[in-house]
Amino acid sequence: MKRKLLVGAGLLLAVAVVGGVIGLTARSIPETSKYAIDIERWRALAVSLPGPRPTDVRVLEIATNTVGQWLAIEDGGFGDVFDMRGYAFQVRWADGTSLIIDPINDADSQQEVFPHATWDALAWQEMQEAMLAAQTIIATHEHFDHVNGLTNSPHFDALVGKTIFTRAQLDAQLSMGLSGIDDRIRAGAKALDYSGAHALRPGVVLVEAPSHTPGSQLIYLRLADDTELLMVGDVAWNRANIDRPATRPRMVEWAMGEQGENTAHWLRALHDLARAHPEVKQIVAHDRATVEPLVKAGVIAEGFVVEGG
Image (cartoon, rainbow, N blue to C red):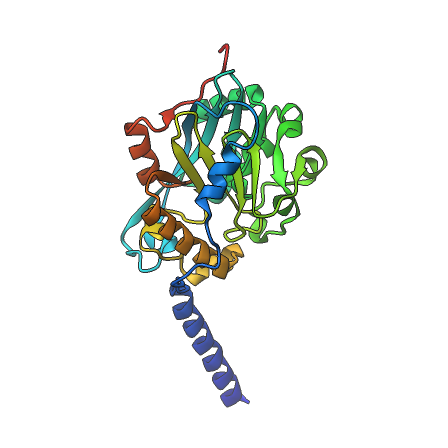
């Protein structure tokens, strides 16, 4: 009996070791993506609705955090750090209307998951004021850090009715309590059903991209001056995921419930898009290394603007 217990314990240990080793590996990136990015179709959709396109895009940094680079990308150094930022974005039109993308989470949500992160109360209040003034609020995906600025907003009742979530975002069942969407949002937000790509407003095109979450979507922006931006959300955590391309380790994929094969195919598609169309500036949601150069170049601006404020 004792020998059987020892053998059983040895097998469990072996399984744990093998699982750990496999978990540190990453899914292979395909040579060809099953997702064909038709940039000309996106461009056509961006001008398909009547009215002028946006004049500018602005970014607001609300949270900062650091995680091991090995969590963000295959073969990331164990001693290297990924500088992870919590950014919200504001898209503005000449008539003063605006759209908010990714209402970043509140302080309590931040500390619960990332206890060593920093959080900017003044910036969060600035985002809340901009959300009150905005006509529309959307998210790249349904994780709490991209949604809880709405979920836990002191102005929730005034904001939820002008928030648009996709049906996939509203229906997603996420593990580990990662969703920022609750029953109040399901009851009060606008539900959007679309397939492939959808023109939301002049210059704003949504592209379904189930991968990091079931409701992940890309947001393509074509401004009035023909500047093109593509917000990829958390399909990638940093630009290296797209440039190499390479995915996150399987243990991260498993823990977060990602659709790993889809993520790998989207990273290939985004890599190919970057090579074929470098004029389309890809913004990775948490990566300061992609955001700060765009700010320095004047492509996007820092801080939100509230008309009349």
